[in-house]
Length: 473
Image (cartoon, rainbow, N blue to C red; front, side, top):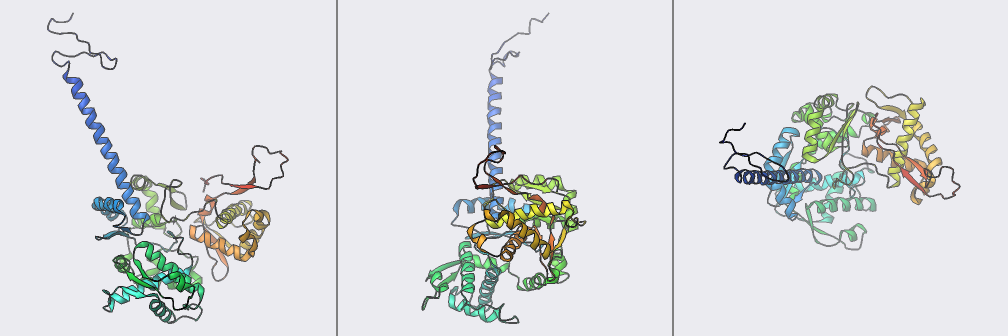
C-alpha cells in the first residue's frame, strides 16, 4: 500500500506513461527538450568542423598552390592552419608555407617513385624545362635582379640552351630551333602560369612556339615563384638525377635515404614518417623499396588506417608486399595517376597485367621473389604483347592500330611505370613486374555475351569489363 504522501501522476509524452514526483510535472520535459536541442547543435557543429577540416586537408594535398583568388578555399585553410600544421608535424614532417597571396604544402620525398603527375607535363624534357625555369628564377634572385621579375621568353630560352649544353652530348642539350623543345618549354611555362607562379604580360606563347616571325613573349614572376624556388635544391636534384639515369640501377630500390647516403643527413627520417610520405605521394609503398618503413606501417596498420580515414576520407589497403591508398571513384580532384577503362594505353596496360598473372600462374614465367616481384626480359614482354595485339588489337583506336608493336609497347612501359606496376627495362633488357600488377584484371567481352551466351548476334561491338581488384595479392 502506498503512503498518503506519495502521489501517482501520469504524463503523456509521445505515448509513454511516466511516474513523476509532485512539482516536476512541467520542468522535466522542458529540461529534456533543451538538453536535446543543445546536443543536436553540438553534434551538427562538430560534423561541420570535421567536414571543413577534411576539405582543407585534401585541398592542401591535391593542389600545389592555393591562391588568394580562390577566396573560400584560401580562407578555409587559413582558418585551420595550426591544426593542419600540427597533423603534418606529427605524421609527415612537411611544412605549410603561407603568405598573403598563397598557401602551399612543401612536400619532401622519401623515395624516387613516380606519383603525382600532371597532364600538361607529359615528357621528360617538359620536366627538364620546368627545372631550368626554376633555376633561372633562382639565379635572378641571387644576382640581385630579384625585384625585376619581368623577362622575355627569348632570353629565358637562350639561357636554358646555353646552360644545358654543359657536360652533356649534343642530343641531350636543348635546341629551341627544334619544335619539340619549343613545345616542351611552352608546356612548362603554362604549368607555372596555372600554379600562379607566372603571369603573361604581353605576347602569345603559341606564336613563339610556332616560330612566327619576330614573335616574343613578356612574362612576369609572381610571389609564388619564391615558394617554389625555396624548395628547389639543385645539388639534391643532381645527385638523384645521376642515380636514376644509371641504367644499371633502374631496378634497384628507390629509397632516397639509400641514394643520398651521408650527403644529405637531414633526409634520415623515421620509418613511419617515410611510410606516410610515400603513401600520400603515391602511387604505392613497396616492401621491396623500404622494408623498415613497411614493417612499421604493418605494425601500426589500424592506427594509420583510422587516421587516414578521419583526416582525408581515404582508405588504406595493405597487402603482403605493398600498401597503397584507395580513394572513392570520382573523389579525387588532384593529379593522382591510376588506370581507367578509358584510353587505349590504359586498356593495354590492364590487359598486360592480366596476361602477366596468367603467365605466372601457368608456370610459363618464374614465380615472384621474396618481395612479390617477377623478373622477366624484354623478349618475354615482346612475345606477350604481340599475342595480346593479335587477340585484342581490333578493339584499340585508329592511332594505336597504325603504330608498330614496339612503339605501342614503349607506351605501355611508360604507363605501367607511372602507375607503379613495373620497372625497367634496364640496360641489359631486364624488366621487373611489381606485385601491384596483380590488382588489375581486364578482358573484352562481346555486348550481350553474359545475357545470351548462345546468341547468334554478329555484332562486333565490345565493352571492357573489370572484374575488380584482386584481394589475394
